Amino acid sequence: MLMRSQPLDPKYSKKFEQHDKDIENITEENIISQRIGELFDDWEFDRAKRKVSFKTWICWKHRKIKEFYYNSKYTVRNHFIWHKTIKSLRPWEGFSGLINVMQTHLRDYIETEEKYGHSEEKFKQNKIATAKETVELLERMNEPDDYSIRCRNKVDAKYPDYKSLITKYENGSTSSSGRFIAQGNGWTGMESGKHPREGYFEFIDGIFELEVSPDQNETDMLINELKMYNEAVSAAYMHAETDSNEDFDRLGQLLKDNLYSWWD
Image (spheres, rainbow, N blue to C red):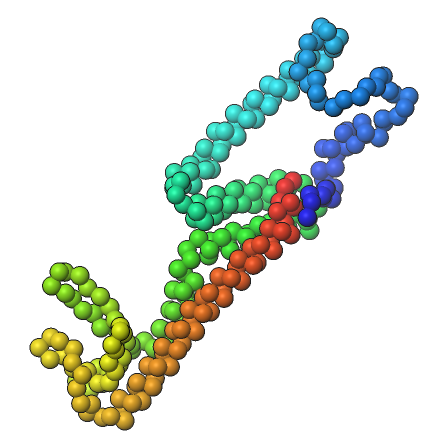
């Protein structure tokens, strides 16, 4: 999709009408000279040799001074806009660095478009809306683990009574494993790992041991519920993968449809 011109907001038309009139007034009668070459191949030239008027030379010098002023102005401005992003960038970062750069620029673009956009209102609002949606997508994509965390939290909210077995070792390390729910004086659940056990457990001298259940029917019911929970967790991770893929697809579509429209 190539860049195309956008309809101007009527209130900005006067700002550009002089340029339009200059183009309209070009006729064969106004031709002074013609040559074969590139339009700007002699932008830098010897004023005396080319016989350029002093007025034209002053105008070009004034243009260069203005260009230097605006370059300096935006150098200072960009320092304040970008310093947090630049400070956080690391050369070994991949997606995170790219996403941060895109977010910073799009936020700056949105603010500028809202204040100074020249396009007709519907074009202007579409550019702002699509740019904002892109920023929201980038925010989600910047923390890939959040996809899984969000989906997992929804499942855990449905099973608030389940707890993990916390194990401390002699070397000071700790680990979390399995899922368990209180039953009687102990816990019913399923261990994780290579050789998991399931059923009713109690702590014997500080060690988690499999024991005879005080109510086997209740234990079986809780085990079945736990298996449903584990299935829900697996489905949540699959859903997180789907959400991530959909965001990537949507981002690609937004960039394809709007990247060349985000200008003014």
